[in-house]
Length: 59
Image (cartoon, rainbow, N blue to C red):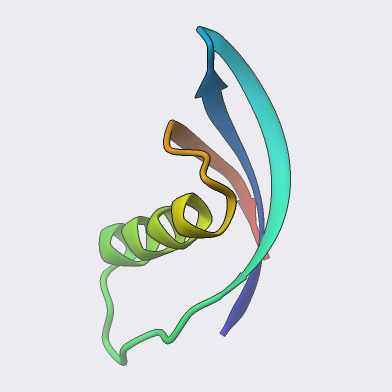
């Protein structure tokens, strides 16, 4: 599934916002917390934004 995600991340002590489109395989019967973790992991891998803090919007 493809998700458009607005999120915040930390860089040099500053909180910044960004928007990314990520595509992940979503297992059937996944729990919300696990889906959020998968999305955050994919954002980190794709962008290098290791300080992903909060997902504001997920479409």
